[in-house]
Image (cartoon, rainbow, N blue to C red; front, side):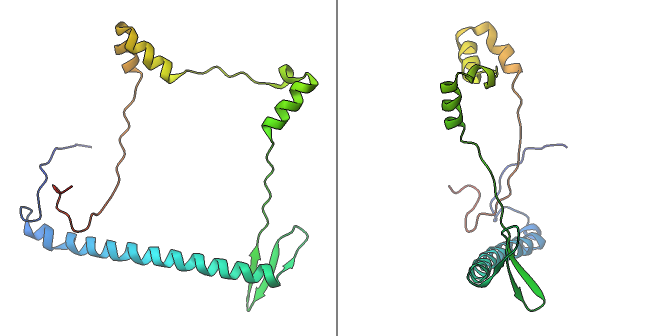
Length: 153
């Protein structure tokens, strides 16, 4: 992909067919659609909460603990999801008390980035080599800023 540097222009300096044409229409439509999508998502969340409340109040439980409530030709479901997490701190404390900690612990060696940076600052010969280990990653974000020219902060 070829990248070219462009000089920022204000709406007054931009070609009028770009400002007043398809781009202007697309930007307005984008902003309107974004606003509608936001409102629709908020309404969907409201409806989901209301339906969930009705299921909790009047639904019946299946063998897996899910809650069901029929509505016309539909079945509404509050699906029960169980996650199990180990209390690692309590388990470690117990293992130490039992004397089995050394048998079950894992030691992972890994690079300390802060120490690497510090040594590359202290030892100048290392700086260039350490710099060669870095990779630049470029990402792009799309934004439309309403009511401001490019050079306004």
